[in-house]
Image (tube, rainbow, N blue to C red; front, side, top):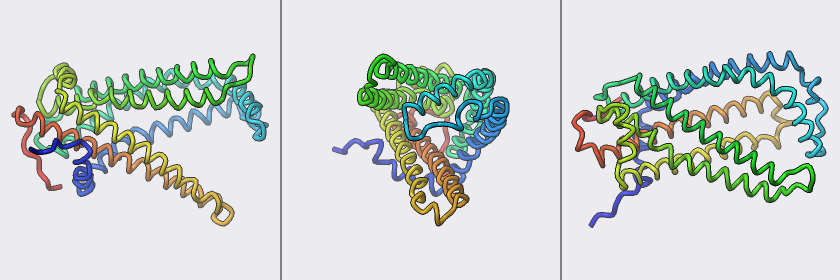
Length: 308
């Protein structure tokens, strides 16, 4: 009797498969940076406008007390109260524009990556964009829930009329953050697999969403497992990037500030490129598990090629 294959057992093979085809990672990096670089440029321009209208000196940021964290926190709160109207006026138009831009770019980019993996697929950019928009809406709801939970933790443990309960606050922040992280990993797989089902099984958008919720326990278990593992990998990459950024600090006098800036940029680029590589690995894992559990039932996808 064969032992059931765990989702993580095939991960190494899928990592090797994607690594041997650098065009997949390149496409993943390309579409993400096509979105990210213009967004960063717009944020930089708007930030310069805000700082020109309200210089840090006028907001009190130049006189922060680094020796007393409580005084510094109050100073930051006062400064944020001054900057908040300026930031809110920018976010009112920037967030909707960025959301639409991301849905379009990610829908097209993800479709191209899937096409590269499975050349027989017929791309359907409009439906893929709509599914990416739904995924983004779920992410926004999850982030809103996390933000409100952080506000609750702060309001109940740090009050102006009593001694702040820093231990209780830190415990709730850690617990709630991990809870929302796990909830996101468990809930997002349905919208993550829907574009694949739509393209691999050549069904409608509504049918893909319905099928993503009725994949059966074995298939669903593998998807959730891969999603959780990829979430843990992303956390590990963040920690690794932080270590790479902090490691040169004891040698800052010898290296100089310019060298540190170069190292910090390199660590940031390393994180984003490797993270995009693992996104392609996750996509490959989804495709392989679809073939294992549903591929024989579908007549729409052709045989994938192993050549570049």
